[in-house]
Image 1 (tube, rainbow, N blue to C red):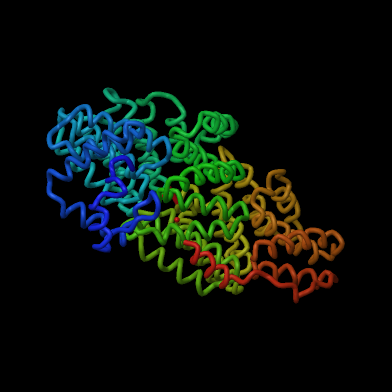
Image 2 (cartoon, rainbow, N blue to C red):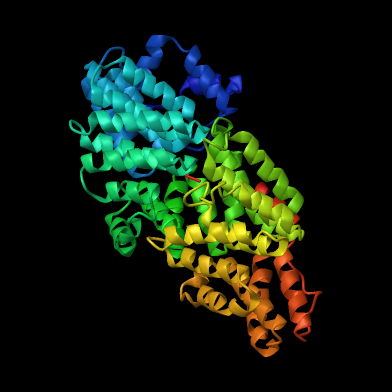
Length: 579
């Protein structure tokens, strides 16, 4: 590049330096301001700019990506060779995780591709890469340009599919699901790979909305599509208790296989498998896989917006509350988030659940109410359930069990069925405790037993343990112990430290009231230690009171994390799925 500059003694240098626009520092040239470069470029005559681009392209033969862009700048008409060079540039950028750069290269390659159908295909591919930037307007623009150039049903469907993936995060889940399911049905016979992609995206919308008729439509379409991991993934996300757990033992091997394969396409595939692991309550595996996927995303730029909610939930359940709050804050701070109401609402609802558990009930209510204002509860049942779980946690923190129960009744329908097939079940113990303290035993027992019937067919050990806990809380005191012990017996319970500590505290409270003080103390101590580590102030105070009642001296002066300061620090460090 330096060879293209005038010699050091050339008179041109003196004139340029006198203008104040640039200065030389050894072999380097510095512009006074970045905008000076743009101003000089656009002020130059057209022929001069073309000659400069040609000269730079000639000097950059060892840097194919920069050379391709300079050649593209000189192309005034379609040019298949330059278009192909840009397409190769896009491929290299994509392998590095540079999705925005890859999408821009493909869009320019499409402009230079002689064939309209080929150009449309490139534009549709560019829209697919732009999805990972979270910029819905850009995805819509690229997809619209693709559709305007072709009548090819596969390209038209692919363009619509990419818009649907990101538009799902706006909250229009019913319409989006209908479009994606129609693509899957129309192309199942002729383009099964595209159809399967569409149905997998539709399964995400089924998770967001929790609509049962959508599960039935997915079940109708799945047999028409080719077998493989993606079809199994769609079934897991859409219906985790309907045979989805059969894939759980295979997940570690699939994840290890992708990790060994290298960077090409790895973040997206790792993310999909992490989501499957989380849905199936393989939480440690999900968190580890998310960590690896997130690191890959971050090396290239912002995460795709849809990823934030699931990452935050997995971290919350695994006891990494600070990390969960960071993800929520980053998701809400994205410039693209202004249109992605569902994604932002999900982040608010999950953060509300965390801060309520930490005792900041005012902040929790503000966040949860904000989440509910952003979405239609019938379109985004998952968000509505998370928000009401947060409001429940706030009421429990204040000892208002009647208010807690009323919020919990918003999580289970009038007949006792869950409002959301996945998000509702973890609230069962809260429902049971609130009911036991407010006289709603009969209604709560009916809800718990209906849940037990469903979960017995395919629920995870975690959820079955929550059913045992719930039964114990609702049982007559003399019959409660088997349920408490069954709830604590699962060897994997340490995967959910907050839930384990709650179970330990509840059993210890029962033991102390039965005057079995010595047996209660180890459970109380373990629960207290976990609550303090997590910063769950209302729960640590409750455990502290029980410890004192059990005759143990607890140092109340030991500092605890401050919920308010945590909230401020996480938002000051402000980040793509599907919450």
